[in-house]
Length: 168
Image (cartoon, helix red, strand yellow):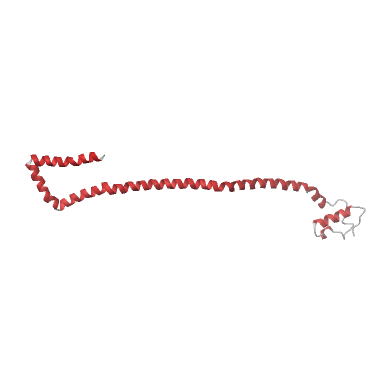
């Protein structure tokens, strides 16, 4: 409703009252008797109800509208924060995810390399562990268990296998 329509509606009761005063003595008498009635207890309640209705339609309605807008605004801000937090998490975790993927690939490569190294040393391990070419019962003083390291054990076994060299 615009201002012009509001003014027209407020002039309507004034026009009807003027018409009633001009044409009817009963209307004049009833309106004059209403004056003391408004000054009494019922009149104060009647006027108070108009005042409360005006307050409700004015400031209370405005506060209610403002509260609805605040609620809507807070919902929007919360949704934006959730979306931004999700994007921030994805952006910050992307390098970590790449590092973890690289570590998995590196682990697989390391496992492959370790298997290759293990396969390369199978022959050497078999050579160290074998007892071919000598007899420990013939030379009990050359007990391979008295050796302190694998290197010394391997050297002793190699010397025992050679016919031309004697262990001293």
